[in-house]
Image (cartoon, rainbow, N blue to C red; front, side):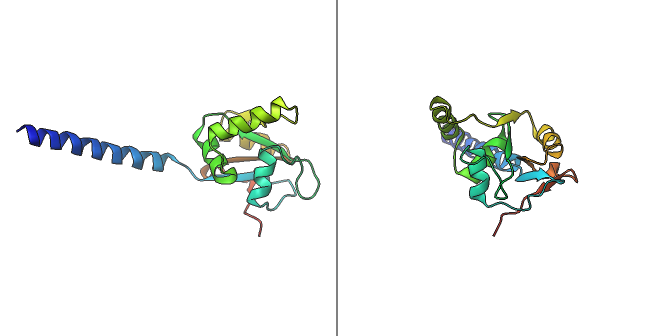
Length: 148
């Protein structure tokens, strides 16, 4: 009887682990980069988006100012955005901004609490850029497709 109980315990852990992995995958929403629907920006490369959000550039390719709007530290959408567009984890991002702040070369983007707040801010300012869950997109913002 004891060997069967041990097997069931191990099998239960394996199943529970699989369920947790599946749930975490399902919880990750598609993140899209957005600008104001009234703004002139039509497309940016991944590198251009990364440069704006990492403080390496403060202008769009047209020369107009680019104001990045971030999401709250620790949010899943923020972690997914930075992983996808910059290749940086939350810890790497924190180290990146610590160095920039310490050397006096800049400040991180303003962070808002969620996608709805980011969308509202971007819709009202054609110089801003942010990221939200794809399901939050409406006519007030334009999704930026990757530039060729």
